[in-house]
Amino acid sequence: MKPKRAGQFWALDILGAALFSWGISGGVEALVAGTALSAWLACLAGGALLRASSVLLVHHFAMPGAQIGANLWRRAAMSRLLGGRLPAPVSAGTSAALAIDHVQAIEEHGARFQPARVSAVVGPLLAIGLIALASWFSALILLATLLPFVVGMIFAGTAARRASERQLDALAALSGLFVDRVRHLPLIRHFGAQARIARQVEDATHGVATRTVAVLRAAFLSSAVLEFFAAIAVALVAIYCGFALLGLLPFPPPEPLTLGRAFFALAMAPEVYLPMRRLAAAYHEKQMGEAAESALADFAPGQDEAEEASSTTSAAPSPFDGLVVDGLILTWPPVCIGPVDLRLPRTGIVALSGPSGSGKTSTLAAIAGQIEVPSGRITTFAGHPLDPADVAWAAQRPLLLPGTLRRNLALAAPEACDAAVLVAARRVGLGPLLEKRGGLDLVVDHKGSGLSGGERRRIGLARALLSGRPLLLCDEPTADLDAASAAQIVAVLQELARERALLVATHDETVRAIAQQEIAL
Image (cartoon, rainbow, N blue to C red; front, side, top):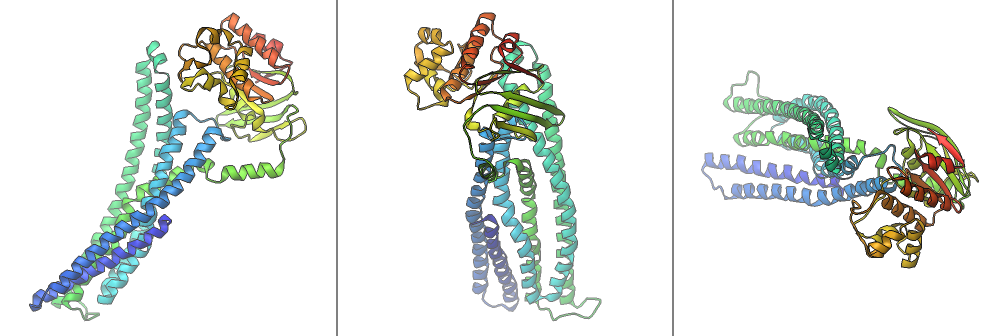
């Protein structure tokens, strides 16, 4: 059941409140008349049981629906973050915030706010209608105070939404900063930069705290508006009922009012605003949930399927016959990369050069299909869109998984036999490592402890080689290597270029010298 439909069970809460109020009013009249109270006590018990049942039913049906919706968002976000096209590069901490914290906010929005919103729309009108059966004038008083309350809540809610969006942005930034700094903690300690990094984290934390206080301020404002009008409404009903019973009204009584009817109207008056109180309590979840959906707009469920369907209908995959990049421009303020134009045949090397921060890695990511391309075309020589399945990636810092060397080498081809893995490993120069360190059963951790920089890069190259893909993207394959290791990597690249296309992002003059074309960013 959807969370919105689960909110319909809150109507049972109003009916339970009416039964409870009827028991109170009838009990008061019975006490005055000196009659039995058993029937009215049964009404009190029945009303309490009905209200408890409504709370149980709402949570029973709302939570599974909210979890199903959140799981759709989580799968869509994880799919895009792990292997889809992104509008811009996203840090690990920000990715975690998007896939975990933001999705959790969406789940709480569905579980708490959606049912409360249905109750806030139906509940007050139902309560006023029940009060009108006993005292239509009391119902009119409550209806008159309800209208300005709604206007006040709209203004308070608008302020709360802006504050919640700023808070979510600050939380995502803090998560990215914290994860990045923890990852590089040994390096930070080595250079004695603990104090400076601590100040950065402190400033980011202070920003989150400031925005959280702004959200709380908006929430307190919303609660103050609610309590102000609720207190006025109940007070007006109490004054009217009391003066009517005592005959002290300054105008002719608009209706005959008995003690039982007056007590019923007075007992039910707070119930008019109870759904609003419930909504106000869940209003923070509304603002956080909507802000999270806005932040995850690029990862909405079904978007990947629509993009895949569009690409499938626009052009069918074709055999790779070379890479063509025309007018590629990448922008995410204040960064602008390009335009980039290049032609890479089925075999050969093209070098992508430029200073650090010029966008070499981002350009490779766009060609690999990891970043959305706002302007330009990435196609084959035949004019077909480049199929990401034709692209192998050898990163500057290859991903290493805890386990054996065999598992890490065969990551791109899990079905490969040991013989094929050994051929690829020896071809990229990992023969000495295999002979000295236990072969494919060498234990590797996620940091690559005990492996040199050259050995890690060779693992990335061997993995790309095992994938069998015709286009190989290499990101700084010789960076930070000694001359001998760099020369071995260059020799491997030359050999690979005889059978497949290589696009290499590099600063190395040796790599640029063996390239058939150099693209400077």
